[in-house]
Amino acid sequence: MAVYRDLYPAGQHAEQALPEERKAILERVATQPLLNRMLRGIAALRATDRVTWGNPVLHTFDVQVKDDRATLHDCQDTSRTGQANAKTGERLIHGKSRTHLVATLLRGVDGAWRISTLEQVNEPCSPAA
Image 1 (cartoon, helix red, strand yellow):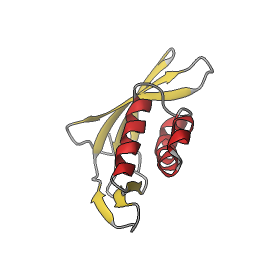
Image 2 (tube, rainbow, N blue to C red):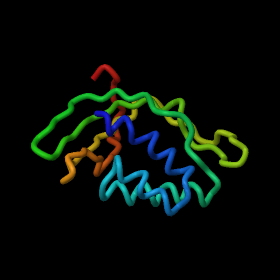
Image 3 (cartoon, rainbow, N blue to C red):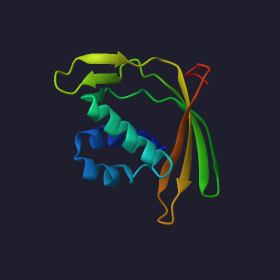
Image 4 (cartoon, rainbow, N blue to C red):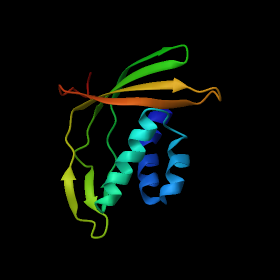
C-alpha cells in the first residue's frame, strides 16, 4: 500500500526533475512496463509545456498478495487533479471521481515492492467497494 501511495508524488517529482534524473526517481516505486510508460508520459507532458496538478484521493480495496506478486484495486477520486500549463499554472484538464484502477505490484530481489502495471477499468466504481 505504501508504494502505491508514493507513486503519485514520485511522478510529480519526476516531472519537475531533469530528464536524466527521472528514471532514478521513478525506479523506487515503479518497474517495467509501468516505468517506461511513466517516463514516456512525462516526456510527452513536458513537450507540450504541461504538468500534472493535485493528488488523487485513494480508496484501495481487494488487495491480494501471493508470493512476490500483489494486485490491488483503487476507486480513485481524481476530481481535484489534472493537467496544467507549466508556465502559467492554468488548469487545463480536470480528473473525475470514481475512477477504477487495478495495480499489479512485484517484489524485487531487494525485497521492495514496485508497481509494474496500472490499468483503468472502464466501469466506474464506488469508494465504498
